[in-house]
Length: 318
Image 1 (cartoon, rainbow, N blue to C red):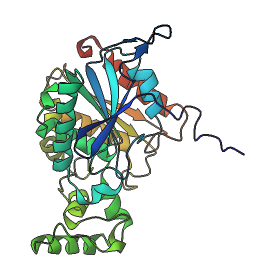
Image 2: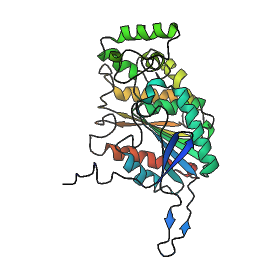
Image 3: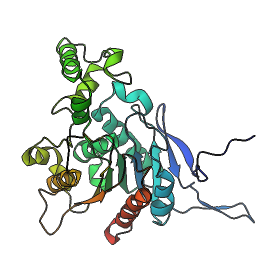
Image 4: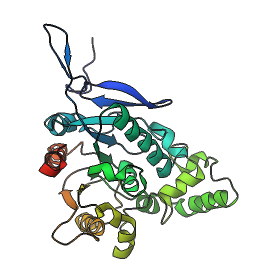
């Protein structure tokens, strides 16, 4: 008996390509896109805007359940856009020996390749979970950040706050990682029991130390501290940013009683440098949504629709 597919729509057309030595990405739709069945000649439809999809820890290709919806309901109806899913060195379990800076450098390689070989002129990012940290970091440090026109942050949550509440060994793990770092062993692996995947002391601190490199979205920051970390997001008036937060996100600390208030604080911090009547970032609160929008009916569709509206706005069309 043949097993049923994971989902009736569990496939995407496209092409696999190398953007750097040993690193590949998958772009949809297939380019050249339109073939004549009569002559087998190919007519190229140029898609000069590239949306890069970045998942969270341990994700790789097809990082979120709504990937298919994102392609069919946001990318395809926007004639200048294509969807790019890169495999970074930090994809799957590679995140444990990486950093946001390394990810940004590899995204620079991807963007450069797409400009040189894929006719790209502008870019978007959809970040899920830790992919949100990648997007925020790229908006400040990426070589081609000025070409980043549309960004969606879906599930921008704090790794640190959840660990502080749920892991009784949190303080001792932090002390061990700091000791390793201080003794020039930051690139050595932490003991197996400290984390669910292999991870270096430096990466562990990035994710779980107060003020770590990945610590952008924590609720215990003051408004001023959030602005220090996030105000650059709204620094460009020609960029649009969607921030989607789920009310039933299983990775949000249970100590956070009002997640909609946290969403508003994050958005306000991103818009701190904007004129009040010209915000760059806007929030989308999904009351019953879980972390990857896989459970509550309609949440994936609602997020995708909100992102599609950004793509199709007049000033984001190529």
